[in-house]
Image 1 (tube, rainbow, N blue to C red):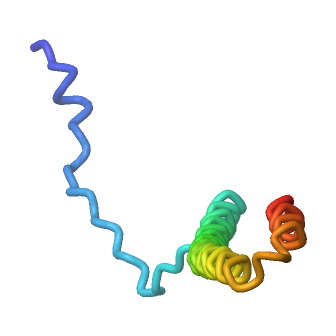
Image 2 (image 1 turned 180 degrees about the vertical axis):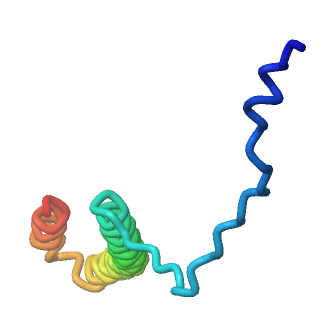
Length: 108
């Protein structure tokens, strides 16, 4: 009697999809230009940090040396004042001369 359309055109057989086999070649990451630029910028940044650290340490060393020299200069100034005082006591008749020396010395 009536034929069913499905009977006329049977569905194709079902075959499960095959999995693609992985390539046996080792995967190698190729850096693009942006990756290379990023690496270069990171290297330059590390170089700048290293230079900055070296300059900081050099600066600290200079500050410490400056402080030592300042203390030494202060001690020499105190010693000079003490010697001038002794000089005035020993040679009171040269008081005018020593006062002039003292004034000249303290201007600098």
